[in-house]
Amino acid sequence: VQLVESGGGLVQAGGSLRLSCAASGRQYSWNVMGWFRQAAGNEREFVAAITWSGGDTYIADSVKGRFTISRSRDNAENMGYLQMNSLKPADTAVYYCAAKSGGLFNPTPRTYDYWGQGTQVTVSS
Image 1 (cartoon, rainbow, N blue to C red):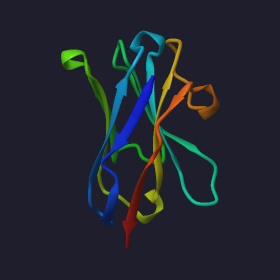
Image 2: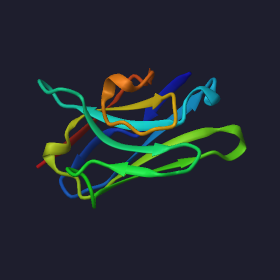
Image 3: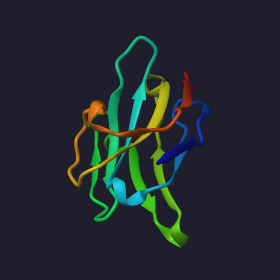
């Protein structure tokens, strides 16, 4: 399974970005896609997740109301998205896409089996 993130960049506070995650390989081996972030000097933290089959979503309290997660399964392509609105400088971090086998959501990073390389999001004040 390969995960490739895109869409990061520099944005002013209050702005928006949409991150994408292209998933290829054995889609049958995972059923939850998550987004995590890691700011310099901090541990990796859960941001949002979606179950691939049912589309159930989970959003961290710190970004609820500002971030949304979605997925697309058109034409055998599996794409995950993280729409980030009303961005704050505190949202600055490397954002990672991850995939988890099994059908149950879990916010703990170590429970995810596959990871992308990450994409930098920088929010200026």
